Image 1 (tube, rainbow, N blue to C red):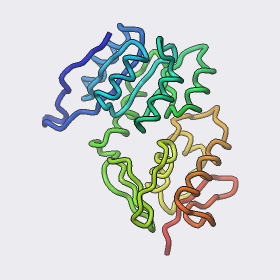
Image 2 (cartoon, rainbow, N blue to C red):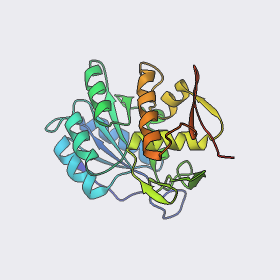
Image 3 (cartoon, rainbow, N blue to C red):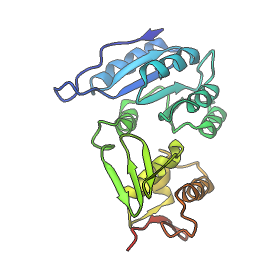
Length: 238
């Protein structure tokens, strides 16, 4: 099953709508989700297995991909690994009862977040809109010191030189830069970057912060400071 439609207009103009590619073997669930999200201005393309999902991810270049933990032909973990070799598009994993192991493996492979399946529009809609380059939440270039981040283009420059960041580190930097000179707690980072309220090790955050510092050349932790027992703060140089 492959579903492709003309993208709806957004806000009464011809600006492209955000596109979500849904890979799920339950055709009825995909149809219901598509109808609900398209009423919110999101274009949904649906496929039924991982092989079709890889093909359509390359052809359609969606803003977000949603894959079921029970994806057939090419499973969700192998799909995410293959997709990550080509694109840094956010990938959401739809999980239900009994999918804890798949969730752990998918997050390790590069999934952005896990969402409940059956899917809920109030949970999915903010994640899709935040990743869309044309949305209000993602437009604009942020600059702190010598670091520039273009959220719409998924680009980072340090002292004018491009720096490649994996998706999760990019989102972590984006969140810290939006909150420059403020201390953000580990719980806030879990919620806003990993979209997880609990059940995640704070060591995962520490590892990503360490890698991010290394890529930015923040060798003495002056840019991203650790606030002991609380979280982190990205500091604007004086």
